[in-house]
Amino acid sequence: MCPREHPGGLPLESHGGYLIRVESLGSLPLRALAQQALVEDGAPADTVLTVSVYPRRKIVRLALDSALTAGRRGAHWYSTHHALARGLSRATGVTVHTYVYDPQEYEEVLAFGRGQHVGGERLFYDTVDLPECVDGEFDDAAFARMQSRWPLGHLAWVFGVERELLLQLHQMKPTRLSLQASEPELSLEHLLRGIAA
Image 1 (spheres, helix red, strand yellow):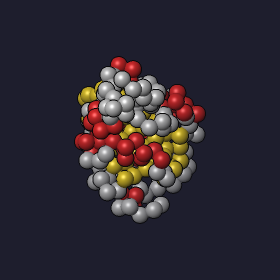
Image 2 (image 1 turned 60 degrees about the vertical axis):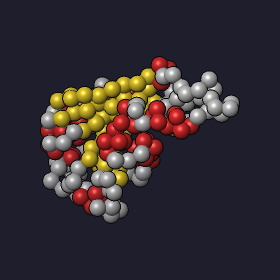
Image 3 (image 1 turned 180 degrees about the horizontal axis):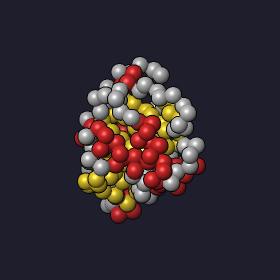
Image 4 (image 1 turned 120 degrees about the vertical axis):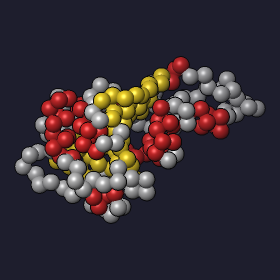
């Protein structure tokens, strides 16, 4: 078998967050839900909520920006902190997914519906049997098919996008939402329509 340095895919940085597919953000009390989640999950009060949207499929990625969620260790934070996912799933009536992508160790997707954990999966890359080499070359097509069955690949299929697009949502320019009570509420509806903030 040919070695592959990063079984999780390209040598991307670790990241995590919350993914939701919604028709509207207009009436969603996003700041209030995030403020409550900060308290429940023990995040610092100066945490900022980042919102990235893929408008074509109305996929919204939410992530908390703080020292707790930075880097590889920060990506793992989303494995155990689900208050925002529970709150969003209650408020919207749709499934919210938390995800962790650590290209050196594992990927994980957990699903929440109506405020409850309803499913999910974690895959450790060191447990995966990689495809055999063909003529000394790694079989990228077989590897891509394999990745499509992994947690993030399956979620991408559910959302109707490619796995790589889902993994790149964190690189899109986000809208930053202060969670300080004194800040005015920000209308996020324009993001779903693909209008820059």
